[in-house]
Image 1 (cartoon, one colour):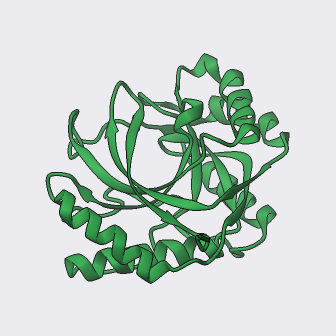
Image 2 (tube, one colour):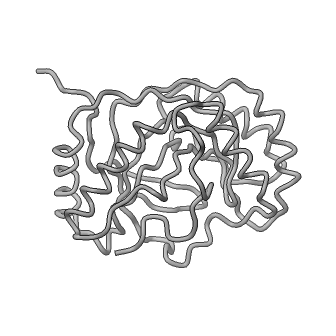
Length: 238
């Protein structure tokens, strides 16, 4: 079974606070300020065209304020030739279950049902998204607080580990919302200078009532997916 995050973890270390939006945002930006070169996000020999993966996502394409913030940032950075994330494709990645050539449809449905039992109904996630930050391969928005996201991630990883008898852990999870991906090697400092004034744009509030197990593919320098199973975070009433 492939690793959840096969190449790197960014930022390498956790922020000093998992609840304070200002601390999390400052930590994200400080880490990005140490990046010298932006790399090609799509350079993944283990993920060729046509290969699909089961991922747990929080989908955010129905959040108007977030879409507006993302598009304002994308338009301001258009000269850098990044691959922008379409409004309907905005998302927060929780974890990967496995590639579809490693995990059968039956196994994926079993993982989803096991996750429902393990996660229960903790309630909707209320998140602050922004300000702008980056990583070695992408421009992204900081997300806070982290506690509930880490708890959800932990439960999903535990479920996957129990089903596939594999190790569990959350040490490599860094919540964020990507808005544009690098598609070549380029110096990071000019991009960072252009991003700095955009960091003054106000963060937005989003509420997520569900996580989705999706079948994810990389196509034409974009992520595209179909929802496979849904994990409701709120108790369903009849």
